[in-house]
Length: 356
Image (cartoon, rainbow, N blue to C red; front, side, top):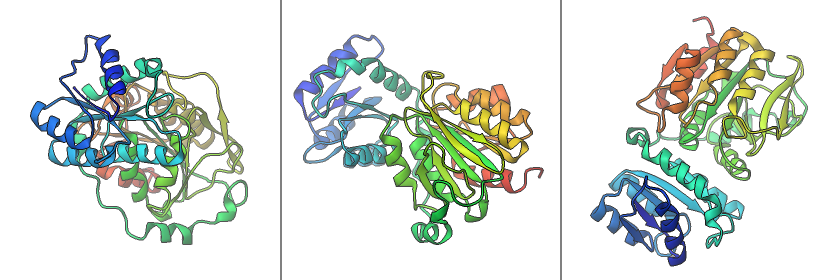
């Protein structure tokens, strides 16, 4: 693997962390993006760790060049301590990075060893990446921001309006920001269902992800708030560090956030959300499981199907990591298996024609 960071200290620390494991071999280091591109072509590393913010050629520009010229698994190291830094990291995930690891105390983190386990987990995911799943995103819908502004009742936020009568739950992890950027903007304006999304991601980054998705298509996207009314035509993203459920009644469905214990090693987890949708909406809900490591969402998808709801999982070919879709398919089954490009249409079909 190739380690890219503009700090010689950080390159040394990352190398020492990787040296504690027999799983990975560092074949080279690079001090900036230009150097990294030369090393990628010369050394052909399977995995690249790439600093987000660097001089000369920054992490995003370097990532774009890598994915265009010589696609491979890339893990970003982010010193993001500001909304701008978080947004840059989310952009990197949308552009094809497999995962990211947050440096605990900024760009030069003396305590990087504190997240060595997280770094090794991210690299293990990168080792299992499906490079075919890193294909270029489909073109964005044009005029999405204008459509959203015209079609969303701002007064419905936080309690006004009428509760949703149908719901869609989406679960994703590794590769998720890229997948969501493909799926959410292509859901139709007349979907007339609430969309609730669990993306395994730390606090802060989910807000940036929601802001980036908002306005790309006809549905408004926002980080969910505890107690707000769940209405149709809205996308609610679970905040990092908090489980999200839907509670109340069909006439008055509300977001419930909690900091209960981690499930499958993550919080938020999709299983609690899916179970709550099954309990409240029954046959009027659809569950979708997209790319990701692990098996979160499998039990919840089974609950949705048991309540008469429908299920769709992403296919192996388009999944960056097939773990979650495979576990869901094996444990719960599915009404549809769809490629990422066809996922939005598959979800809409199951909502609009549930018995078709």
